[in-house]
Image (cartoon, rainbow, N blue to C red; front, side, top):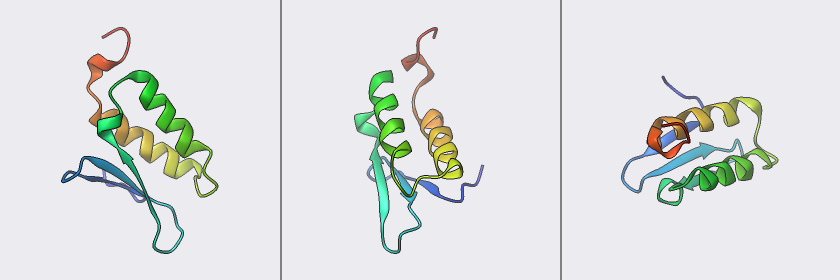
Length: 76
């Protein structure tokens, strides 16, 4: 799936979110997403940003879930 606002930077293992503010990209370090709680914290942090809209949030969560191993979540 091609995203409009998020990309994966494989070199430093981050998700980059285009904020729509010229020259500003928000980065989420996937090395800091080792627990379900840490992932939820990042989702919350992105959600409360003034530049975050539904499309950015949806793309971020989708890519985050693609990159995080499924055994991290309960029931797996």
